[in-house]
Amino acid sequence: MSEATGSHHALIGRQFPGGSYTLEPWRAWLLADALGADPWDEQPHPVMAWMAAVGGMGMTWDELFAWFDATADDGPMFGEHETTLHVPLKPAVTYRVSGKITSFDRKTGRRAGTFDVVGYELSLHDGQEHVATCWNSLVLPRRSPA
Image (spheres, rainbow, N blue to C red):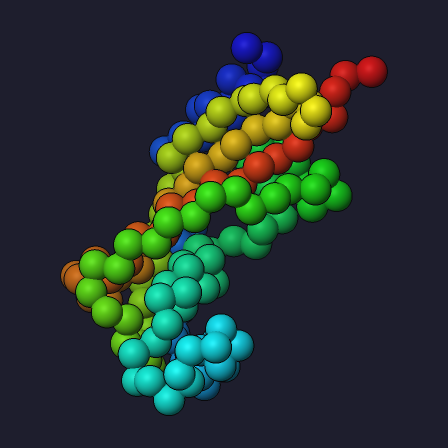
């Protein structure tokens, strides 16, 4: 294991700064309309949970990439995603967002070369109520040494 890979493994459990995200009714309306759902439905579309989670994680994508010695120029990609709604989302509510890094794996593909897969989890809370959990992964391509 390289020194960089070891330091990246050490990031498992690292907490995001966190913050908050207000689920604005106009944004829920626009998202539903864009997704072909009923924009007049008072229940926000479940995709809003992910939007709220990343909108309130307390850092930029570039800052997250930097934790793993990567940049947007390296071509990071969205990997997997799973949202669990514990209770329905509500419009006009400000959710507290928290999260952490859950995994780090270095992989090598015959055609893809070396890449890292970073798992992270973000949670939405309304007061003491756990509203949603969004688990995601990022794929970070690594340049092969010359």
